Image 1 (cartoon, rainbow, N blue to C red):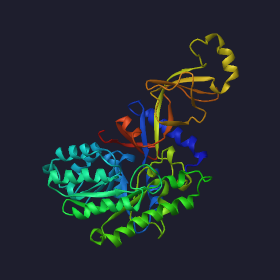
Image 2 (cartoon, helix red, strand yellow):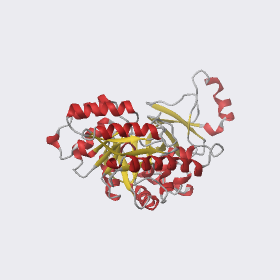
Image 3 (cartoon, rainbow, N blue to C red):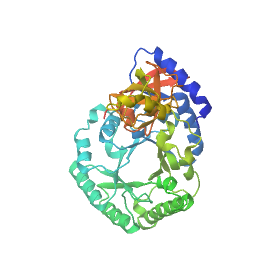
Length: 403
């Protein structure tokens, strides 16, 4: 975990680096030194007999995806967005495997196939993509699409292990779909299960303990696996994908009782604020928004309250200085200078946001202020490129995926 006493030096050095840079706009910074440390921690948390799958939406940059995948020696990816799927299908090789992280509308899946150009890649979407289905109706839609394409499709079944965000909730529901797959074996193939369980660490302990949540989740997952093995032996094989976890629960599955053989994660490598959870305490924040100060004012003057400026300054000395920054209104929290806070009267702006600090704050025009994103997905896409650092020095700029 990033030590608080090191924050000041860390951000002051980044500020010096950015002030020497040839451009001053809002930047999304990714610290590869910290990413490397997080990767090493993750390796110790990952279940020894499980495959690792990179979550694309959490690291939406081709270079960043390749970096983490290479460090983790994996060619498995989880995709949540059709444009990302289309992009990856043009650059991945014949050994890669993609699992959809959410069910795609059947029109979206059809659009993907209608616009896929086999001549541009060695990637085979019929054997290298697992489409996620969450209902019997959706399974039938994908069966119909397979018949129209005259190609088999791999179907992974989303099971509800306690999050209650969709997916099959009972063994009988899973059985119904497996019967369809069994009957149409030449058209669709059962490729495994996906059960996402972030609720295990987020449900308040007063409602249910983490131990009970994890046990209930694993029990249902194991029951589904057992049912396939015993009742549908023709669908069972050693290559089935039993995916689950996610950054907050990876280390909880590093036991023999876990039903998973395929674990997806991404956010823990850059650790935005949403992932400040006990199971990730040892991981370091590795992504920050940096944006320059455009204007500095000694007072905080609110439209319509100009006459009360002196009184307001006395009452709220913590907001004595005002600054307008380049941009704002991101899903992020101010982290440096530590005294900095959004002016609630002015509110956030995508153009110029007013922030306040006490008179003791040593911040000036052209200095940079720093924020931590709440999440990496979507937020990373707002900056065009990622500024890559090592040792507080900019070493490269990486593109993000087209949205």
